[in-house]
Image (cartoon, rainbow, N blue to C red):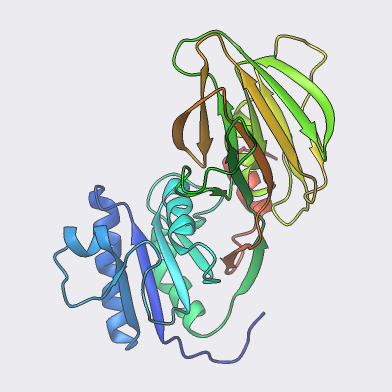
Amino acid sequence: MHSNFVLIMTIAIFGNAMKPETLEEVQHILRFMKEKNIHVLLSHELRQELNLREYPSFENGHTDEAVDFALSVGGDGTFLTSAAAIGARNIPILGINCGHLGFLAEVQSQDVDAILAQLVAGEYTIEQRSLLNLSVLDKEGNKREGLILAPNALNEIAILKEGLSSMLQIELKVNGEYLHTYNSDGLVIATPTGSTAYNLSIGGPLMAPQSRGIILTPIAPHSLTVKPLVVPDDWKFDIRVSSRYDAFMVSVDGRSQSLSTDMSLHIERAAYTVKVVQIGDNSFLNSLKAKLNWGR
């Protein structure tokens, strides 16, 4: 816990500019920042929607200014977008929720003034969250650089069938060793942070986000003996997909695109982590109890 007063020079604010409740919350936060003389950058979308030209823009991580913290105002989806925009810049993120309770955006809007005061006072901890990195290779085995615009996933990378096509055959090698060919609707490869997202909805195991592991969970597998698997997070995965329509979908934290079955995938732990700010009693266990109604 940081107990000494910390002078925060700059905070970047991200949010879904299409949601009125987010815009209202951002304006409230801006008033707080102005009272504390804190320099603010706004995401390009917020800056345009609120017509606040006096604030510099933080556009897809392109800024020359040093940023001490980022605020993600919205839900877990906004948090994932914020993390992708920050990338490897090593900026801690605090999630402020404007809707339902989330596992990433844990601070509720009614608590925001008290939470921001604690942030300014240095009363916080920071958790390191691992990510997955996706590479796409052509049929000759060469990396297709730039094909995936945001290749790092804080939650999961999902291999999915395209539209209403029949099930996929997903051949998986782990550390170069053949493991299994999944006959299924898809395969989710999730981080501990992502264990409470898509992975949870398809029956995968929960993991504390501080854990070091990767979860492999098939979607509607054709065999009842195929179960989710948790492996160390330094293991690497090579995937080939077969489909009746010679195409499949790959989704990186919900950002989806279609790929040809001529292409293969390589997945491993990303080279950097996301720093998540924790304040007060907004812990993973408290979120589990509240969101999943445990102990009630």
